[in-house]
Length: 294
Image (cartoon, rainbow, N blue to C red; front, side, top):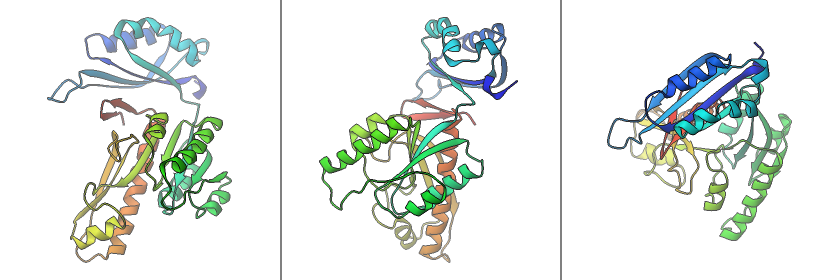
């Protein structure tokens, strides 16, 4: 069956009996073929939300191969279980806006994965508050938008620059904004505008070793494990729902520069995983947490 007939259904609702039966039964009756299905009920532990999550990858017959048609087909089940349910066409590639400052390792890694076919997305724009990576963007044929921010810029100046970014997001029909080491604190208004569709990456030392050269600070303290965290952007700085984390072991014989290089490698891998899982509709929000269907 053509890939244009493949869809992903993601849903969340209160956990109760009969949800899997209702979903799979409806798809079966409609002539759909389930390719992959995963589910999770968050019902154990003091912090359990009591919610049920499901991701279904399926192929639809030609007369149903449209998101609006599938939405209409699913309306009764959605209402019956109070679901937040969404259909996504597999053939429709997510459109990414990459944002970067002066550290380009994550940007370069994502661009390589995209160009080599490892990351099935479109990248119509790159935004930076510096011109450092204008030539890199040009080498990939991607429009580069230099939106400068003077040192010590006040809140009004920063917000005006953010509105320019929001205009690009709107104009380019951006699905996901990736902060590929974009070193600016975002306003609550900007975070709200990008809720659930902006991912950030940072080292996992926080709240320790804040500020400049965190890996050098870690080296000075004899840290043995370094890592990275990718999470959704919220107004609470670096505290959004976590998508992916990883660590690497280091030792006393390594220089601060060597530890920094290892840390940057981890950041690249963790961010790439988070972006891929997001665009493949594998991440579902669960309050302050996330559910990842790998």
